[in-house]
Amino acid sequence: MSLSLFWDNIFKKDRRVWTIQEALKKNIVFKDLAPREINQIQVITHVRSYSPGEPIFKQGEVGVGMYIISKGSVEIIYDENRITTLKEDDFFGELALVEERGIRTATAIAKDDTQLIGFFKPDLIQIMNQTPEIGVKILFRVAQVIGTRLHETTALVKTQQRN
Image (cartoon, rainbow, N blue to C red; front, side):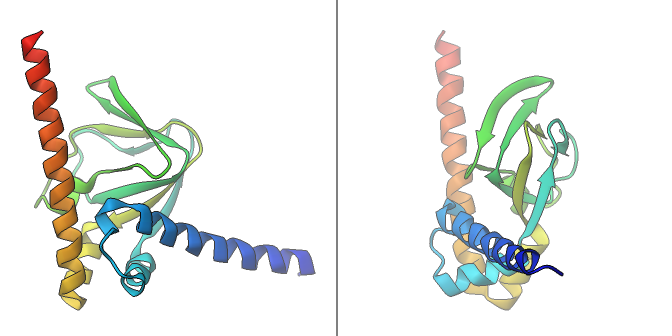
């Protein structure tokens, strides 16, 4: 192995860990966690890469967890209509963390080369079993996010009804 390849691998590995930790620190779901708690979460997250046009999940599938966009962008589509485009640091799919067998209400497709950090329901259950206080912090924030999105949706529906 060449010396430069050796150094490249070390820096890429360190950068990946830093990216996951930074993404978790910036995300509202993990906002209340101490650095050591972020480290616990980082170890059980899943990094996945998607090509342009590749589905992340499809409307009607069972949801398994949430995703944070660390690179690229994702289109959210409902019944073949583009709802929004999410970019780096945005997240989606958090409802799957709390629903028993939640069905995805929309399709998520990578718009370009995209890297996601996945945090799945089995990961949350593992954290709740090992360190309940971390699990409670995460669940509280997920509930806040869902509540905020529900309020925003309700306001949007009221606005549409008036027009």
